[in-house]
Image 1: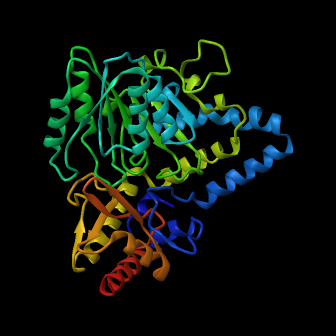
Image 2: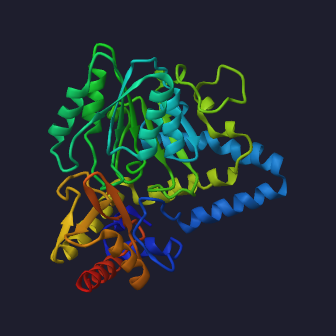
Length: 391
C-alpha cells in the first residue's frame, strides 16, 4: 500500500483484503474491539509457536527483548518519550493504575462526568468510599458547544480540586471533548491540577500528541484503532508524575523502577505473543497514515448518515460537522425501541451494531473500520430501512 494511492475505493478494497473476513455478521461495532490485520494475526501466531519451543527462554530473552523498540515506535506515534510508556492489557487497566495510584488524601476533590466510562467512575467512587476523597460530577450535554463544556469544568473547580478525569472521545456517541483546553485550564491553577485522559477511542484513529494535549496521564487500548491483538494497552505517564504514582501491582524488581513499575510483566507470567503483534500493527498503520485513516473514517460516517437521514424518525446524537468526527456515532429512531432494532438487524439481516444507553440518550452505536466498504454501509442502511418499515 502506498500513501499516493490513498483515497480511491480501489485502495480501500486492497485494505479490506488485508483483514480477516468478518463472519457471520457484518461488524459495525469496531469501537469495542477491531480485528487485527492478517499480518498482525500471523505475527502473534508465529510468536506463540516460538514460545512453545522453549517458553522460559523464548518469552523473556527473545520476545520481551523487542519491547524497548516497540515503546520507541509508540512514542513516535504519541509524541512522548519511550520511558514515559508502560504496556498493559487495555485502557481499563491503565486507567485503574492512575485512579488508584495518584496520591490523594481525605477531602481532596476529583472531577468526573457522568459520560465517562462506567468502570472509571466506579474506581473513583471506590476511593471516595475507602479514603474519603470527594468525587464531584461535572454536568453538560453531549451536543453542547465546546465553550459550554469548558465552562462547566471551570465552574466545578474549587481550591480542593486535585484531579480532573477526562474522556477524549466518548464511547457512547463518538463526541470528542475539548480535552486540550481543559488540561490547559488545570495547569493554569496556582497548584496545578492533575489530568487523566481516557484516549481509548482516539489513539490511532485520529492525529494526537501527548505533549500538545498537556495531560499528566494518557491511556489507550491498542486493540481498537491501531489493530494490535486483543489484550494490548498503553499508559503514558508524564515524567515528573512517575515517581509519585503508586503501581497497580506490587513490582517484581527492586527500586528505582521508573516507568517499568507500571508494565504488565508485574502480573507474573503472561502471554508475550500478544505483544509481538504490536510492531506489525504499527507498520501496517504507518503504511496508510493517521491523517488518511481519520479522513476515511470521517468519510464512512458521513456516508452512512447521509444514506439513513431520510428514514422516518432518524435522529443522530453525534455532532456531524466537527473536524474531529471519527468512526463512532450514535443514532435512534423516534418511537422505536433501539434494543428491538439491534436484535432485528442482527437476527434477520446479519448486521451487528451496539445498543448504548446513558442518562437521557438511548440508541445504536455504529463504528465502521478501515476494512469497511461503502457497500457494507449500503447493506446496513437498507436493512435498517426495512426494519423500521416493518415495525
